[in-house]
Length: 489
Image 1 (cartoon, rainbow, N blue to C red):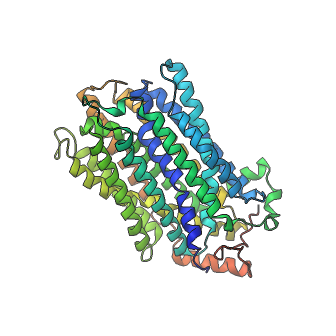
Image 2 (cartoon, rainbow, N blue to C red):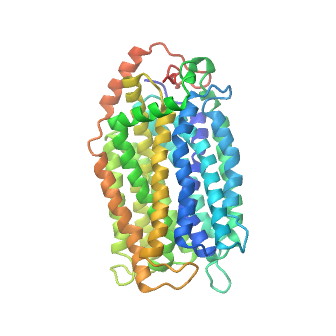
Image 3 (cartoon, one colour):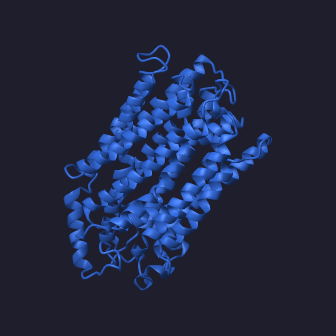
């Protein structure tokens, strides 16, 4: 087993998670609301525009991972992609939240479509090599979980800023008692601030992990197999791995549930539980992410005693119960009624503890899958695996946004840009917000039951890999990195 990864490199790597989590929370929390309720674009069109970006992202993710695995660039096979993506993310995010005022619906939809696609693509150029790099920083079963947990903590701090400070800084109370979220003025400022934050944090991760660049001389075999046919063969072989297939299906469905819930959160707060005061909304969101921060420590500690798959099952099942409670116990005429900010904060804090397993456990499990694949095929393909995993997440997120928009339009019958909604529409917002993603989370939990890569199995796999590839030396400044993990096809 390798030694612990250098602390400075792990911390710099962790900072690089901030752009990913900021993107997730702001795109999920505000993008649909902004284009639908502020700009007046029909829910189905807003959902279609946002989901189109995710579709392009999903298609690109596996190929970006494949090219990153194969790269021989002297700056580093992961780092050259991370650098380009980090530099482009900020400006694209700003433009997404800065459409010109007064655009007719067709032009507004075109603006949304173009910048949704562009932002998602450049984010993928950064994100897939970044995630793959984390799986290469250690081959120790528990050390992998520690690295991912520290990364999750940094990402959650960025999420806290995005979810809570957003409502305090950019949507302060209006003198006349109106809802600042329904005004245009704050959104370009929000896009500029968080866009700059994304780029800055991405650059920290690039420069802080340069010691983990793999020498070009060690990548001679894989780099000669970069044809489209090689890519599709690798895609097929990845899905032939039963462990990967089960993890991919479960994580994809769980992500679908999470995005549906997040995309309707502002609708839920505003109309279903009747909480519009920015400080109250900020407090509820802060409670969720503080719970998630606490949850990271919980999962990291429990991972020393329990199997990763068991913890993941617990997290998904607990999330399902919390989501159902938000629909069945809150709202007009229900047990806890409306306007209960303190109760919602407590519930969201508990939900955050369960949901934080999504940030910690799957990525650590994926590194174990990469070891199993190496033993079976003789290939190191972290980039391909994380690309396909993110492909599933983006398909799920795109489908979730599309489903949310369609349900808002046809099932909820939500009136775009109208501050007053019917009783039936309000009731159905609550149903779609909690019950639908809760059911999806339960199915995802069932899929991961019986996952075969437990601790002893992974240790056996790594022992057999060590016998096959003895005597590897670590690159300078990264004693814990296993350089004999050549990417070969």
